[in-house]
Structures are given as C-alpha cells and as structure tokens.
Picture 1 (spheres, one colour):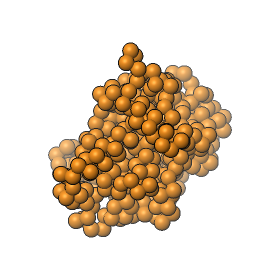
Picture 2 (picture 1 turned 90 degrees about the horizontal axis):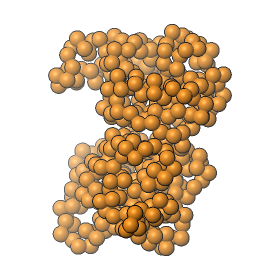
Picture 3 (picture 1 turned 30 degrees about the vertical axis):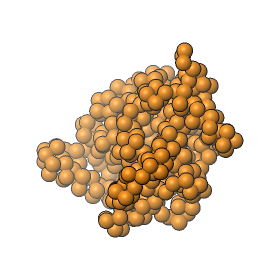
Picture 4 (picture 1 turned 60 degrees about the vertical axis):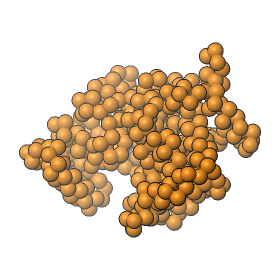
Length: 383
C-alpha cells in the first residue's frame, strides 16, 4: 500500500520520501515499482521518460528524520493503534508545525489516533484502497479534533492526484469497511452453517449480483488476515454489536496462515492454475446450471447478503455518516460494487429487503439481523 500511494503522489509530480523500519522492505518495494512501471511502459500507458521521472521522484529514506521538510506525511503501516500512535509522536518531533500528519488506516478511529498528539488539529485520515494506483476512491476522514478546513484542503490535493473523494464521519470502518462487512460476514456464516459451499456463494454473487468477485475470492485477494483484522476492529469499536461479529472460520484460516493469494492458499488453492476460483465455479455452473434447486439456492444466498448490505447502507444514511451521493459512490469506486446499495434497495424493493431481514431475525433470534429504523420506514409503500 505504501509504495502504491508513493507512486500516485510521484505520478502527480510530488517529491516523495519513502520510509520503512525494515530497509529490505523499502528496497523490495522499489524493485516491485520498477516492474510495475516497466509494464505500464510496455502497455504504452506511460512513456519511458515518465517512468523514469516517477521513479526518480521517490527517495528511499533510512531515518524518519529525513521527513523534516515534508508538507504531508501519510502513514500506511500495520493496523495497530499503539504502533501507529508511537510513530505519530516521533513524527511530531521531526516535522514542521505546518506539516499535515495523516493515516491510511482502514478502520481505526482518527480521533483516537490523534488524541495523544501535541497538535491533533493537523491530523486526518486519508484512506486509499488497494491497489492505490488503480482504485480511484479515497475516503477523507476528519476526527473530532481535526482543524475545520483541513478536510477540504486534502480533498483538493487528492483531486489533483486524480482521485475520487468522499468525506466520511469518524466512525468504525468509515464508509466502505463499515457497510461492506456483511458481504464477507454473511457469506462466512452461510458456509459455516453448511447452507452452501464457498464456490456456490461466490457464483451466486457474481451471477445474480454481477459482482466482479465473490466474497471469498475477494477475501483471498485482500488477505484473510487483513480482512479479519478490520472486522475485529469494527466489532470492538461498535461495543461488540452482533451485526459485526467476526467469523470463527475466518479466525481459523488466519491461525493456519491460509491467507489467500499471498500465501498461495486461502479459501481457494492458487498453486494449481486449473483449480482457481473461476475454474471451480465454472465447473459447478456447467453441472448445475439447469438445476432448479441450485437456482433457488443462489437466490437465497444473494437475497440474504444483499439485504444485509442494503440495511447497512440505509443505516449509514440514517446516521449521517456521509451524504447519499458519497455513500453510493464509495461502494462503487472503493470496492467495485456494480451499483450503489441505496439504488439497489430501491430496485429490489425496500419492502422485500425488510421482509428478508425479518425472516432471518425470526429464524435466528439474533440482533445481527435487526433492521435500521429508516429501512422500516422506506419499506412502507407511501415512503
């Protein structure tokens, strides 16, 4: 993520200083960047001169003190509040008073991260999505202590970097990682209960929802450990709200270090190309495509997951986490959803979404399936 953000900034003409406590990691990241730039040249997306200029604008650093003249610092280290806070406190002693300090955290409270700083007013969340050079969305998150005009200043800067911006309230998971939790959580629950297989869930969401990737494919791509960590953070920060309860299956996968593509095996085995996610799903589709039982299972899976997602989007609207436009934009540009969830709810019918959740609540008697008060209103015909 760090080198991806560096590439975005350097491409926009900024002088970038790149630091990692592990020097070998910095060197590895720069080697990977060279390969990425070479591919872009090969595909004629940039010129050889542009490639050279981008790479030259990124200066590897061996000490944090090299950041002393920076105007903006973006932290992109491990999702651990204590470690991040320690780095920010070190930075405060190095950079000028005018330097903006920010975090790329995907779920940790910006207010919480800034609270230990001498000058929390200059601290803000700038959340890129992976891979940063390709994913257009950036969430800008001011904390309660952030200076009033800083969010707009960052908004303008990120626009100059070619990004699509949304401004979010400082709530656990912000917009995308809060609303998207059921995409993974409910998929995991369905598999844990032996209602369907990993492949069947992914196929249902791709075929009926037109998602580019199913939940398990996406978890493998993101990293099962990373996805699990975000879920735990959101769950804890919402005072253990059952809606965001982590999955035991995902915990066991993380413990076994079956983390997805980066380890060669996760929910799918990537060591054999003939047995990747798409191939397995296609095999299932070829065998079962005419089965009424399979069609009904896919509908059940899709409605269960999409209803949970729409409910989260409606609740985010009710709480004013972002305006309607940003809520829709965030899910489409941050995680490549084929359409906004509020629009999806209207298309399916909010009454049908409400009925699906009510049936799940009746079956499980769990607060996990409680409806947003606003969804209940929107399900009424006169709304």
